[in-house]
Image 1 (cartoon, rainbow, N blue to C red):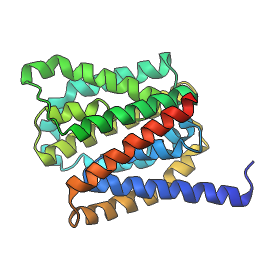
Image 2: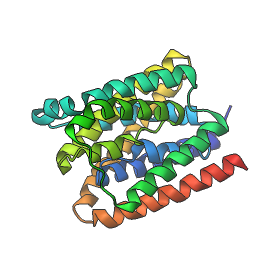
Image 3: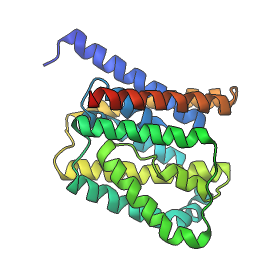
Image 4: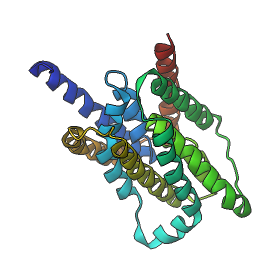
Length: 251
């Protein structure tokens, strides 16, 4: 049992993490699960961190799936990828386990470094329509396995979606759809093998408040800051944090 002061500090720190993660998502369209998992895992088991982010991640991602007018056309282009995400996440949760221990921390750190490194190169990949028919499900399965092990679902989903050549608004919507699929299936995977602590539901709902507050603030900042500079600083920070997590867990 935590003492009252320790419990208060625990939730204040967690709320601050979700506020920061919400701001980042509001500015660049992603980053809430990545940042929250990375920072929360510094002082709590990764499986607990993954359980806390389910509600804030789901609600903010569903918000990002709009507008409804373009939802179906975007979903049709990435439907195969979504099927792969479902298969990869559930399969990974059953065969590899869920986010836990040093292995998950190392895997999360590596995923962060790879994602940040890819983002900092500024290179644009291109996937042709014919390639997307088979590459979409493959990218989805790979994303699902990474999601099951680390609780983070940006690698390789985001690089793949950007390679499809979506316009900016459609890309943000596609990320919202993909992230929503990953969040729902991750929750099912955690609950299915008894690893989703029901005691975390209340805390996860509570973390929705700072997460949405952060998104609103991030949207406000996006209209006033250079997204390019902000994103570069964000990626460098993720890379450094990833390296720290890998070296700490491996040491």
